[in-house]
Structure formats: structure tokens, C-alpha cells
Length: 91
Image 1 (tube, rainbow, N blue to C red):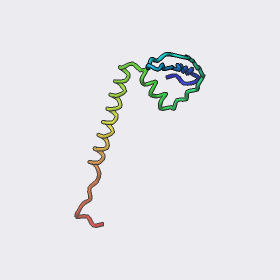
Image 2 (cartoon, one colour; image 1 turned 45 degrees about the vertical axis):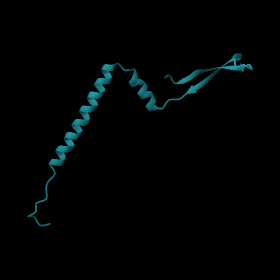
Image 3 (cartoon, rainbow, N blue to C red; image 1 turned 180 degrees about the horizontal axis):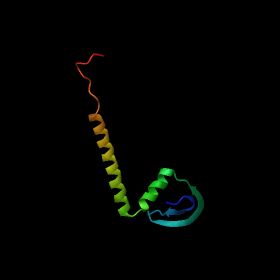
Image 4 (cartoon, rainbow, N blue to C red; image 1 turned 90 degrees about the horizontal axis):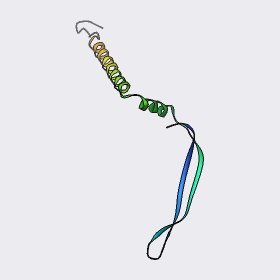
């Protein structure tokens, strides 16, 4: 999706109905108006991401997963290295 000024076209047709239920077009109309479309930063980022080739999407997913795995590993390692309280030691 592009941001900025866009054309919005609306086409309507007024329909008539006869006594036997037959429908027919009476008056077709067309209305064109300029509208401004604003995108959030998130929408712009997602649009850019959707335009990337599949290889980059896979690479991004792999790197994100590897980073999360590494962060979990370091957090687990840190939790194991916490000093334990010595029961024989007086406070």
C-alpha cells in the first residue's frame, strides 16, 4: 500500500424493479475523490518486510530464533552460577 494522496472511485447504479420483479439499471453514477492515506510506522515496516524476497524472510526468522536461543542460554547459565547460601555460615 502506498501512502499519500490516492484516488477513491465509487460507482453506484440505481436499480428499478418492475411489477413482475424484473430489475433494470436506471442511473449509473461515478464519484472520484482524492483521499489521503496515513500509515503508522508499524504498517510501513510490515509493508517493507512483505516486499522482501523469501530468502531474506527466512534469514531474518533464523537470526531471530538464534538470538532468542542464545539469550535463553545465557539466562539459564547465569541462573546456574548464582552463589548458594552456605547453611553452616552465620549471618
